[in-house]
Length: 181
Image 1 (cartoon, rainbow, N blue to C red):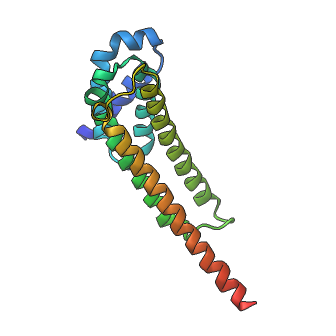
Image 2 (cartoon, helix red, strand yellow):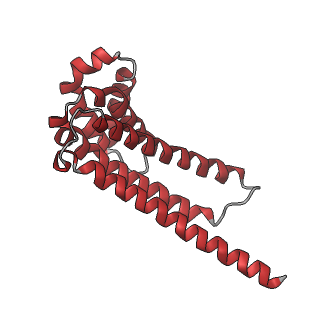
Image 3 (cartoon, one colour):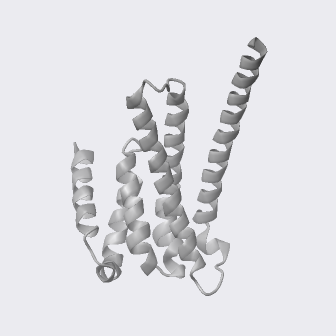
């Protein structure tokens, strides 16, 4: 029950924050960002939408107001590893479900489409982080943003690994089909 109550509190905070102006986000950064990053860490991987919503709010509304010296400790180290975990669990769900996919199974098609859209939102949030880091006049020391390259590399590796496995599976099916003909 406490996790459910926490989730309701987090949801009402998100509902409130999403209404704020950029100026309000800048002013409330120090008090609200820790609450959002805790929410981001404690949400269960099965609550993908909640995590992605929190991630998008942090990257779109608060990230522009975070300086380079605070970026890693106050933001990246708290939200990016969880983003990778959610991305991984979404990829696993696709792999687990894709074998049941058929054009007649519209419910599964919709479910997989939603997962892919969520994965794209995570990639978009990571892109926002990269653009923010690129907006600083001087290129940052990698230690100052250590979570960002690590998380991006994990997402890229997992994505390309999945594509490689899927392509080889498809090629086996094509080769098997052509040998029958």
